[in-house]
Length: 207
Image 1 (cartoon, rainbow, N blue to C red):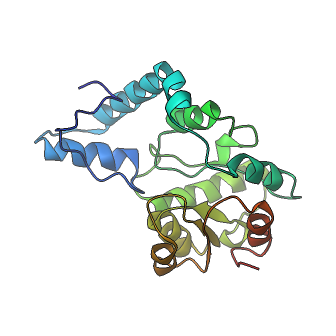
Image 2 (image 1 turned 180 degrees about the vertical axis):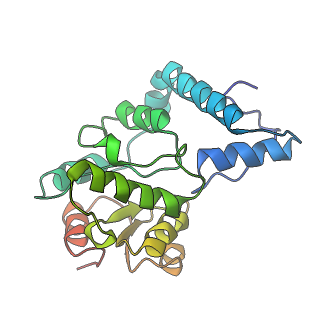
């Protein structure tokens, strides 16, 4: 089975809100396979290569969420706001996905955290804060950040670290599910740019 091409009859691990390393490990377990870190690194490399080869298909079959581009541009205009990515995807795949839809122009990649950095999302948030602290030469505390996410795992990772969160119900999770996960500010989508910017300004509190 080639990376990036999954048979519909082949069992795979849960993917919503889960890091690539966990998906790989759980899928291998379903198939009775024993793996190690070297196996995951080879998989991650093959996955990135597959995304490069299929980037045109990604553009053709996918699309940026309505309002995403405008939201990123508006946040880029805010003083003292720096945008990065905290994701369960490995970094090369995250870069390709955002590049495919022109959403990478305001991203500072080196202070983000990715699927190869740790298995669990709360730790990815901590890693990103540490990298921002090292990059900027000042202590970047949880209250200095705002996490924008669309899964309960995103919300829980922020809450566990004391990071303000703005949840957006653009994925599989409903507004109610995101609130139950701990988000106090939940937006239905990214279409109201002014509302999203205000929520960020108010550190995760909807105006």
